[in-house]
Image (cartoon, rainbow, N blue to C red; front, side, top):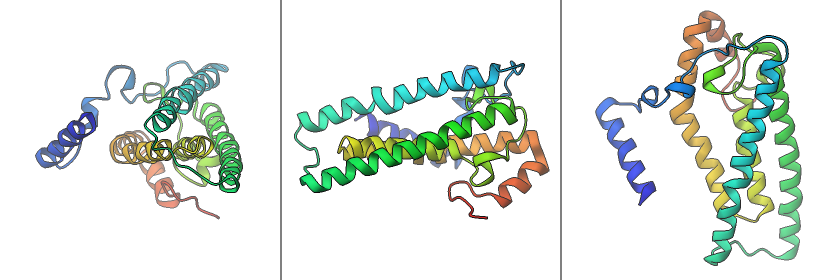
Length: 205
């Protein structure tokens, strides 16, 4: 019922305004603005603390009840032993790779951009180095991949679906507002960057 109600509200916004006005909800600590504390290691420390909080929430606190409910309701995927071993190994490899990408992206943003991933303390400089030279949203790519990895480790189709749905929602709701803010602050520099580097699919050269 909650999901259906939320879908109805979002559909109503699209009918009335041809878009979902996320700026209405992105207020207070979630409003887009550059970080204020940029001296020394403050951006890096803030970024790492944010990352630990988000990882705990989205990779542990939310997925574990989903895995428990799947088993409780007897809708969990039942895999042969060999397939289960493959999914576990794939989950471990994907989790490690995605976590390394997330850490590299966060450190690059803090060091080069003098800011954090949160909208309320965004980078003060446009970051085009490190993972950002291959894809515009490496932290989002890393987060979605981490969620899928947790789903593979827990043999949970619901966690995998939740991770992919989170990526779709981020792409449709948050990304346009973030890109509008970046275009407003960095102008032609951001236009050249976004024309050269794709949003989701990494460029190989």
